[in-house]
Length: 198
Image (cartoon, one colour):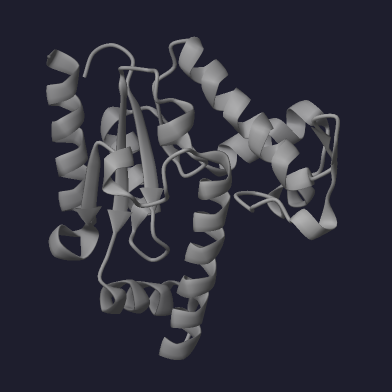
């Protein structure tokens, strides 16, 4: 692909969204922005990475924070806004990258070079992947999936106009259980290529 390319991947926990993003970034030989974003922000702001990581993709906790005259003391909100600004700067500088989560399909919606995809999956397939990856029982995996997806949904819906996982907010919605990680990457790359040449 020629020119700037941005691929934004939203995902259900256990759907393989991160693996799909890694595969796309490798094939296109462009940045994968995930933890790299946190390391860069930690370095820039001189804050320990572990401290930033605790608040990554977490919704604001209304009972533990307050807003006065438009200013908030919520660390989750400060980190989210720093990440959104980081993404906009990367896009404005003409960088090509793949980004996982962080409301990217909303934050970067004004960039015509951006293709957004939401990755879902069948419950059984996601559960099996989580069990294998994290060495959990089926019950533990299901509880973790429910918790992670609830957190992602709350985070996304707090900062975005559209709802998390709603097909109207993405260029593509793909069930990775049906076509696998490689198949999902193929579909996204094919779509992005066709979109680019229009």
